[in-house]
Image 1 (cartoon, rainbow, N blue to C red):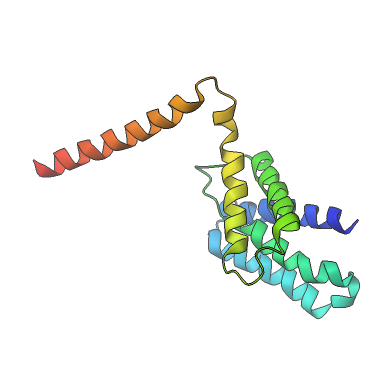
Image 2 (image 1 turned 90 degrees about the vertical axis):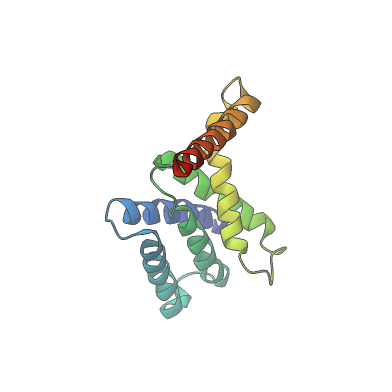
Amino acid sequence: MEIFVLICVGIFGSLLSFYTHVHLKQGPIRSSALLTMLVAGFLYFFPELLSPYLTKNIPYVFIGSSFIGMVSSGQLSSYLGLGLAGLIFTFIFLNTSRFFDGFGGALGTSACVSLLAVMSIPYLKTNRKVTIGFLQLRRLVLKNKKRHIRKAR
């Protein structure tokens, strides 16, 4: 049951942070910080409401999943994708959190990995798996080359 609660926290953390960031126009950092402060503050003042395991781990899962909600709406605007990224983050947290003990940036790195996994799904569904990456790289290089030529003139 505790794992189910953490999975729900991971999913809702990313969704709430994104909703506050995009629809309430609070900005990505403010939305993540405000929601994390509310969740962590509630558990700080009322630690006896939940088990010690949940009281300890819910703030970690929530802040990590709120990093996912900081993504730009131009990059990922699907709530299904955000929820899936929160789910993946929670599984990464549950299975690797003991390996990251003492390392800074573990939550952000795990959030980035889960977000990149979800953002790569459209590329995995196409037949031209390798060529899509090369085409995007080529467009980026040619775009920058054209800028440099225009600036030189």
